[in-house]
Length: 52
Image 1 (cartoon, one colour):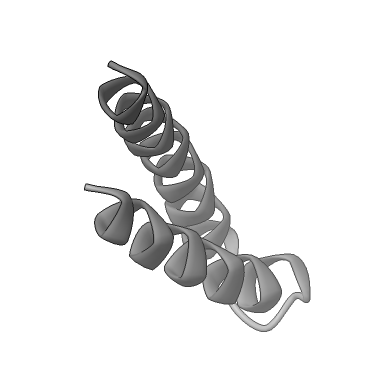
Image 2: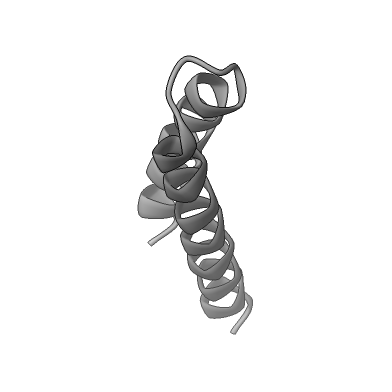
């Protein structure tokens, strides 16, 4: 599960670099927001499952 969270983090950082740099329009910013939230949810779930 943590593996998927790290993959989402990497994809979100790449999308952020493209979207916030102005290379790609508002679609990339939307993708970044969605991936960032997905990463946070997956990371929290992974950490909570590992803590038990």
